Image (cartoon, rainbow, N blue to C red; front, side, top):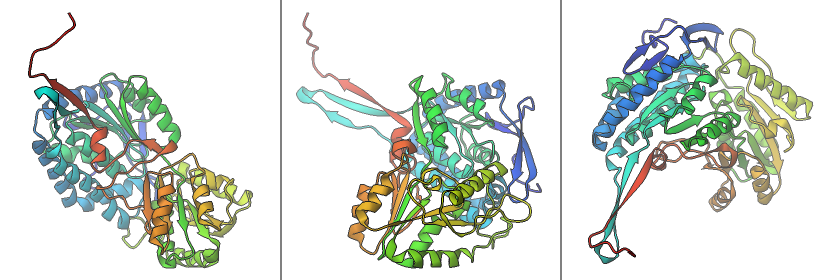
Length: 486
């Protein structure tokens, strides 16, 4: 691809780009055309070893700095990302197929927000003094964990690389990040920018590969923490592997989140929220509210207005800033989504709009809405990760809460209502970690992000992330003589 700031090699290790063509070839496909736009190689054992060895060395140097000094590097990296937002957004669009109109405002900018936020927080990460009886006292010290491994998903490659890296580095850790093999390019630029901003060589390394490379990182004794964004089945395997060596983990996994719309909701806002909860990023968002429970009194009005607004979606070349709905990330993901659309039809859901592949190149699917969906249908139970909305009817608040919670997942939940008392009452009963009232899919760095139940453990973003990338040492100080029994 004709792109000046494309990464120049497969890996970024110890402060520089590194190539090793002995690793398995990974072709980078542009989802809008199906063309191969770049080729990278999976990390060989030698590359994995170089990444971990340099991370372990750099971490010691980094941890000796004050939090303020570490924060300065992170904030400088945030400034560089913002300066280069245009080019980084173009790269994100090539990597994922997401519209440039979206990546320009959400992806690299969100990564910069994380670096800026945790850069600002780094100097404040202190322990506390605890006064004890008899003049004795204690104190706590917040210490880094060591070497952290980040494993990314393919839907937000720049953002995830920063969401994991920023708190890890703020706390004094090093990171080795493995992006998804489907979207391997953007994280390399994050590593390059962090090094340019003053991070020691080896502090933030990026290496490519499939599951085998991830497994070799997770099980390496030099690794102290694993942070993964991915599917529930993958998360369970990684969690188990990390637990075998008592490694710390953060698991940000999938969902089948409920969005509950009451009769009294503002219709335009509710429809807008449902669109954000199902069709932003072509539906490829883990927190999406893909089970839309609509109270019966406004069901037909909701479906009518939703269908009208979906007709105004501009589907086309993702690099055209007018486009606001792009292709699926890959042929394989498109095939998965189409199989769910067929299941929806076969199991008796009513297809309201969409449901077809689109003519031409690339991995495009029409925005798809099913109505008259029941709780037992596959499209209401399983995470599809594509532009497919399931609309379910309900009568009462109690029913909506019970049915909304009747899932193994617990990442997000949302409610639209004009009655704010009801909004808070409903959300307080939803079994989910990241929730919304009269909104959906907002993810500011100041708020914790993460799920409950099968949707994961730990939290990303906010001050909560500090607890997942650091540990406390307690020190008891006796001021008098020691008494012992003999």
